[in-house]
Length: 115
Image 1 (cartoon, helix red, strand yellow):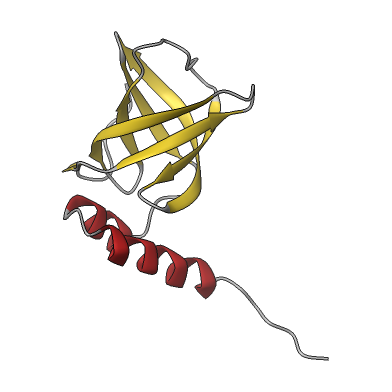
Image 2 (cartoon, one colour; image 1 turned 135 degrees about the vertical axis):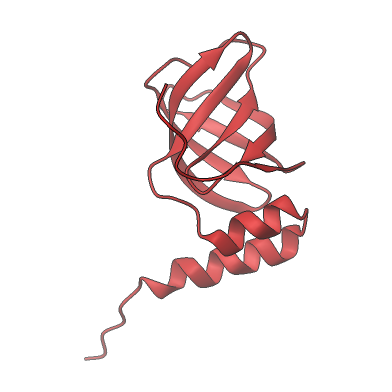
């Protein structure tokens, strides 16, 4: 198992994921960091190395890889780390602020060209 680069934050955030095979399920996150999260997968449908689109409390999609599995718990590693502001709001169960922080962070990388 890789060493953790970002501290975990407990959260009660809920969301859903969609696999490349078309499966979609609702999930509850157990913990969250900039680099990933832990979710329950009692159906055992997620495969190691599989990529999913994860939607957390109105933010996303976040592309994530199934990095590990322990029984019915699965660790997802984000392809792009979440902004610290988003993680802080999600850990505080401040869903509206998390959505706004995600939207404003997503817009920062856009370049507009006027002709």
